[in-house]
Image (cartoon, rainbow, N blue to C red; front, side):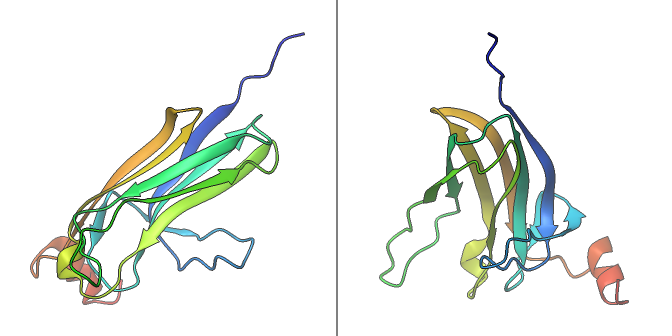
Length: 143
């Protein structure tokens, strides 16, 4: 008998609607990008689709820029694990920004591993918006 091989695919990445961790619904993509404006409560990350992987354990890590905690010590990367629930399963890995925004700027690297091998990763650059860029032009007009 042949053993089915699991398939892992990033289906979307960028800025999303606010995620409610108590809901089964995943956030909706608003903008495909790896450039994230430093705004309070902005939601960004990626959605991974796992096929033929039911029951497998996935480990995730979010490496953020050198953000100090309340004591001034650099926060360690955020880590966790999740088990694939069915044979066509979507998983959202993301984060949001909080005040103060100045120390959240830089590269945020998100990684998902299975059995010690990276199966998905994205790096997002968080930066304060430039006042005269194209995004700000349209944002001021309500788009």
